[in-house]
Structure formats: structure tokens, C-alpha cells
Length: 68
Image (cartoon, rainbow, N blue to C red; front, side, top):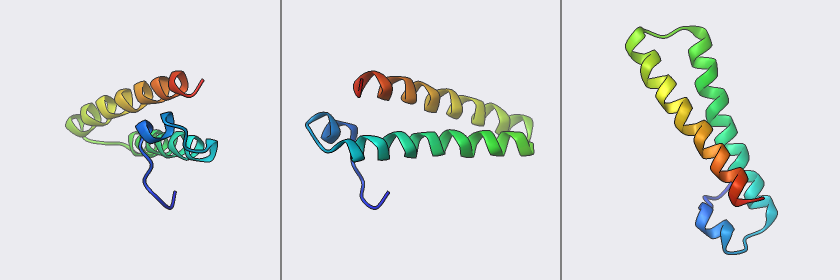
């Protein structure tokens, strides 16, 4: 993604490509967290990663509803 696009900008009519960029960026966050978790983390770091992944997955759900 070359430029930062906020969800609010996208809701105001920015191109579908920007919507896809946002989805891709959040999905990449999820994949990165999942990868770190799969490699193994300390119990404390795992709790943080699980909370972050839950937030990212919630964001993906919200994004799907916003862009539907």
C-alpha cells in the first residue's frame, strides 16, 4: 500500500482499490500475528498476540460490513 487511506475516507467514496488495500493490510496483520504465534511465543507474549489477533479479526468483520 503506497498511501495511507482511512476507513472514513473510503466510506466517503474513495475507489474500490483503496477498500481492497485496507482489507489486504488488515489481513496481512492477521497473517503476521498468526505466523508469530505459530513460531512460538512466551506465555505473556502469546496472551498479547491472541488479544491483538482477536482485535484484527474483529476489524476484518467490521470492514466487511462497511464495504458490503
